[in-house]
Amino acid sequence: MAITRYNPFRDLMTLSERLNKMFDEGMLPATSEDEFLTGAWVPAVDIYETENEIVIKAEVPGMSEKDVEVTVENNMLTIKGERKFEEEVKKENYHRIERAYGTFQRSFQLPATVNVNKITAEQKDGILTIRLPKKEEQKPKKINIKVKK
Image (cartoon, rainbow, N blue to C red):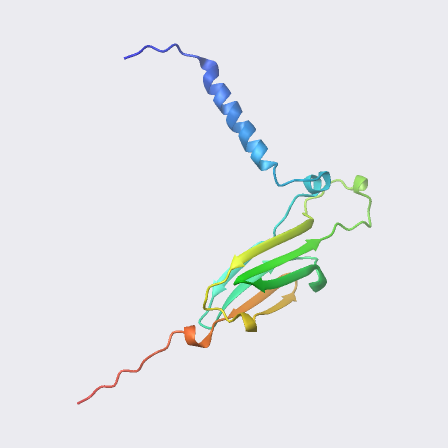
């Protein structure tokens, strides 16, 4: 067994390196001063499935339908848009800015069961609801069993 001299600063240096790495990785998304101050954001989504469709609900409060774009290409559904900072009050007069602003983009790979020609989107009360109907031939089909006597 080799005897190794104890260095109490070794653990401290490892902790320092971990913290530096965490902060460096955490700051990567902020590419401009404005984005750093107001925060990059991505709307939260809920996705659920029923017998006839898949539903995606995204939170887009304060945005109109003109600010959001939904596209489908190569079985990839993309939601993108921009929430603009309201310039009614000068930034230097704000005490706190907690809501995030800027552009966002979310993409979701669609399963082969979705009928892309019948996708609909509607917005109400800050919630964007996208309905992805399933293809008829992809729905489960119940087969009745006949009993012979």
